[in-house]
Amino acid sequence: AEAARQEEARRLESEAREREVQAREKEEALAELRELERMELARAEVEGGTRIGEDRADSFHAGLGDAAVADQPPLPPEPRFKGMGLAQRMLEKMGWREGQGLGSRGQGIAAPLAMQKTDARAGIIVAQEAAPLAPLPPGATRVLLLCNMVGPGQVDESLEDEAYAALNGRFFGGRTVHAEFFSEERFERSELAPTA
Image (cartoon, rainbow, N blue to C red; front, side, top):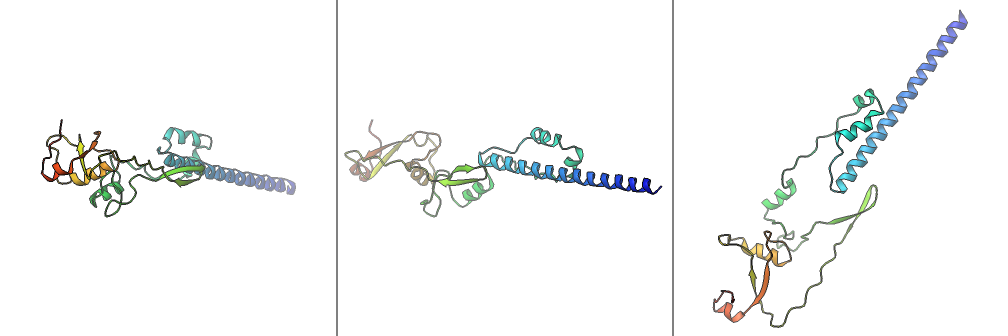
């Protein structure tokens, strides 16, 4: 009888150890799964993508069993942007317009920072190459005539700021703006009609 009790105790102890090993393996698999999902999310954000789909997440979870999926905390909801984000709306409330630089006089950066990926978890900010300035043509004046900037009925009081942004090489309302030098004498006499 004593031998049977000892055998039963060894069997129960062995089963308990086996359950502990299985629980530890499940916990390690869950930790690895969470790390894979975190890395996938980070990679997708860096590359401008979105979160992995539920079908891919389900395939990750398939090998772990139902208990592993039930133990995992729910993922935060995905942001649902329609149009511009919160930061862009806030900047526009403060007077910023697309294509202009940041700062009170528009002197700051106008293009977003570019990131170059160095490895799976890191990247560096790289400077965008500035286009060399073209030399001024002969006969250049201090007055510019901008053609094809707006259509009839589209002139408003903010046009001056928008024109400045267009002159800095930015896109302007989907139109190609043609800039020409205009005679200073004609400008001072208020002869503003372009010559054909």
